[in-house]
Image (cartoon, rainbow, N blue to C red; front, side, top):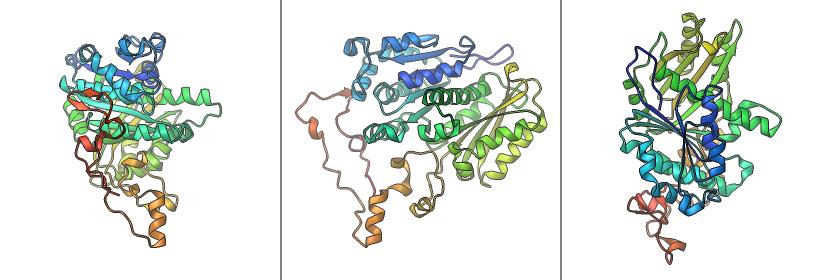
Length: 399
C-alpha cells in the first residue's frame, strides 16, 4: 500500500505481484528505492519469495505444494489461493486501487491471479491487472492456458492490460535473452511506476482519483500499455515517439482506435509545461476525434534531465479484419483468442477461400465436466473449476 506526501489526501494503493513473473515486474517497479512504495509478493514457491524485494511476502498453498511451485498447474494454484483467501484479503484492507501483476501460461500467475483480483474487488478497490502472455516459442499449450486465463481475468478486474512478450522484446531490442528479459521487466515496472506516481505523487497537472477510477471501470475491460523515455533537448519528442511508433501500441494503431486514453507524464523539477503540451498534442493528433483523454503529471527528482511517459489505451474491441492482417497491418496487443476479427483463425479463412461451408456456432451447450467426470470436483466459491469457463458462464462461442 502506498500513500502520498504531506498535504495530499491519503489514497491507499495495493500493488501485488503474483507468481515468479509478476513478482519480478513489481520488484522492478520499486527499482532501487523499494521502501518508497509498499508492495506484496504472492507465490507458492518459498525460494522465489525469499528472492523478492517486496515489503510483504505471502506464501500460499503450503499444505498443497510444500513450499514449492505448482509445476504449471493453474488449478492447483487457484486452490492454493482459495485456501489462503483470508490472508489475501488482508492485502486490500482499505485499498482504493489494486494493481495486480501476473505472468500467464504457467501455474501461479494463471490460477491465482483471478482469485486475488476478486478479493480486491470484494474489498471495494478499483482493480487493474497487468498480464504478460508467453512467447510463441514457449509452445501452444502455455499460450492456450494464457488465453483461457484472460477470459477469467476479464471477469475479475476492472481493466486488464495485456502485454505479449514477443512484442515487449521487440520494443526492448536486446540481443542476449537474459538481458532482454530483465530489460522487459524493467520497462513494465517503469510503466506501472508512472501510473502509481500519477495517483500518489501528482504534479502541476493532477488527475483526480475519482477520474482514474471512472476511466478504469469504464474501459470496457481490455487495455494496452506502452512506455517511453526521452533525454536531451528533444526528450519530449523522443518519449512520445517511443510510445506511438513502438510495437506495444502497434505503431500507433491502438491509440488511433482507443475509446479512452490515460496519459501519465513524469519528470523532474526541470519538466516544462511546453513539453507536456507537446506530448499531449502529439497523442491527440494520433487519437480518434471522440477519444476521451485524461492527462496527469507527476514529479520525481530522480528523473531530472529525463521525461518518462506511460500511456494506457482502452480497446474498442474492433480489431482490423483478417484481410488487413494478411496485408501486414499491425494489430493491437491482444492475444488471438480475444480478437473478434480473428475468430475464424487461418484454417477457417482458408476454408472460405475454397468455398467450403463455415461453421457459425460451436455446439458446446452440452459440454460438462468432460475428462474430469469421474474425479473429485475442484470447487472455488461454489463453482466447479473442472467445468470449462464458457460453460459455467453460459457463454456462446462464435466462430
